[in-house]
Length: 154
Image: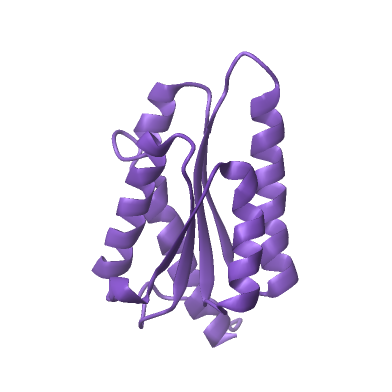
């Protein structure tokens, strides 16, 4: 039988930083509320959380990197929402945000979670921010909690 390493979903007061895009605040504020609620429901004190607001999803990685290096959180959760428009701008923003967020985790060793909704329509974004498909903010927080505990196990 192989050794299996897993992280559980108890916060144990993990220090988690959230970086939240103000662009599409109608959606991102719901992601943030769900992430904070998820942290509390899994045993955490919301006072342990740090929240940084940035203008848009392109700015998520730089703020996440600075937080990871200076505040030394156990994890960083990046929350944003990019909705496709009539130009290719969507593709560039979504791609660069994803690459940048991944790079933060790789370079710092701090789990950095991609909680950015990428949607073709506003309706799809709303579905992923708490209606039909659950809330991506809560899912991102769960991933952060699990990764914090997994890395402690490793």
